[in-house]
Image (cartoon, rainbow, N blue to C red):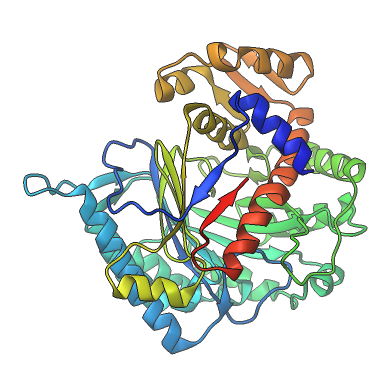
Length: 422
């Protein structure tokens, strides 16, 4: 697994140099000239901990959550002011804002306050999204989110079926309550998340989940592959490659036959304009524990420790834990990897972003991808085929276990690691 990702990294970056994250921290983040900039806010609190979930989170405690939100708002002000000068107080235009977790709804009473701080420095043009636990889908909570300016919600269903709820340690979902709440309070996008490639899962299982979602208020679904992270306590093991391939293709063909739009590798919508993805953005600023920031030449990650995050903000210091300085080729690989998540890569967009033609840098790779049937090409737009989408998913699984699993595992144990080499 690590051999495959290492070999791919060496080939695509044309260098044996690994990705090196160090504990250095910038006092100034230069994001003023970044186009297609998005925002992300992390709320790391849950009522209980799902054993399969790899994200930064801890059990909710009211006083600790309150202290954390105070620190979060200070971070927003600290970073937001970096784009201001004595002569220029212009707000920065950004694409979108996403709240993730954890369970952001546990801080619902302060979402409006967080948004007020963000709006002092940023103009959001493409909407605000919030992740929700099924228990949070109630009329009062949805109404409070909508009044605060939220336009998109993503509900972490995982599965409507009891056998998989039991496997994942989730309790049954009250469909009638969710359907009624979503009918009473409307949002631009209502996404429901599901996990695929669970033990013995079939197309019929996923078809039932998809049909149930669209029949009960969703206009967008995300079907994420189960990944067996080494640092979680889950005993669940996902299915083998051939089974995944058949399952992903069957789900994709079914959704396309129903006229649903494929908006990314794992997402489908039944309405134009219904989208929910914090991944496909050229640049982003992340606020809160474990949040990441991507700029032109750097990638930084905030500490995973709530206590150390709050302490840093009490001292007026950015909570950066690790920073990666990109080489040009490394930045290109990162750009292509996550742009491809949207199912297409534009040669014109690549050249606009880097000032170098895509064919000059990766002409052979895209020629090979076409010959292997992974992509088609028309007027400089490369679009993934069904085969290409599966192998993207398959490689992303290797990438996650070789890179993210290692990094997050270390950062869960150490608030500020000295160095991580990938």
